[in-house]
Image 1 (cartoon, one colour):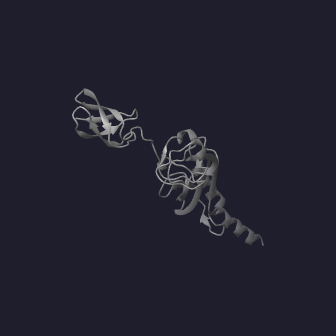
Image 2: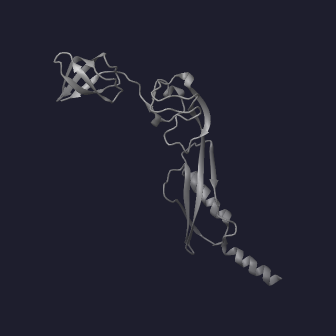
Image 3: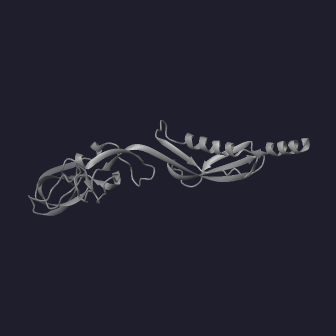
Amino acid sequence: MLMMMSTAAHAQIGVESPDAIRNAALSFVRAHLPAQSSGLHIHLDGPASGIHFPRCTKLKVSYFGYSNPYGNQTIKVLCQAPSNWQIYLPVQVQVDQAVVIAARPLTAGSVIQAGDLAVVRRNTSGLSGSAIRSPQAVIGKVLRFGTLAGQPITTGMLNAPDVVHAGEQVTLYAEGDGIRIATIADAIENGRPGQNIMVRNLQSGRIIRGTVTAQGHVVVNF
C-alpha cells in the first residue's frame, strides 16, 4: 500500500494541473483586454480533466490566429521547459454594453428620428460594425438599408444626411495653387459631405463635378 501511494504521488508531481493551464490562459486573456473593461464574460473550454501534460516550469501563452480580444478566439499554451508540449484552447469573450437599436422596423433611406431608437444592454462582440452607444450619434443620419425592430444600429449602416439638394443654389469654390474663386451654381444632384455631385456654373453655364463639404458648399480643384 505504501509503495502504491508513493508511486501515485510521484506520478502526480510530474503532471501539470489542468487548472494551472486554464488559469494561465485566463490570466493572459484578462491582461490583453482594454483597461477598465466592464460587462465582460469569458468562456474558456478545456483542458479536459482526463488529458495529462508533463509538469511545466515555463509556460508561454499567446493568441493563435486573429488577435482581436473580443468574440471567438483560440489561445495557444506552449510549454518551453523542461519538456516541450502545446495545447490550443477555444475562448469566447462577450462584451455587454449599452447599444442603440431600432425600436421598430425601418426602411432604407430613412432619416432616423429619436422615436425610431431605443437603448439596451447587449453582447457587442459579434457585431459586424462599430456599435453605437448614444442615440444622439444616430439621429438625423440616413439608413443605408432596412432594419428589423431590435436590430443594433452600427456605424456601417449609416450615411450622413444630404446637405445639398437638387435644384438649390450652392456656393461653388474653385481651388488650386493657393487661389480660391467663389461663384454660384445650381445643384443637379443631392449630395452628402464628401460626395461628388454635378452642378451647373451659373456664370459660364458649364456642368462640372465637385465635392460636397460639410457646410453645403461644392469644391472643384484645378
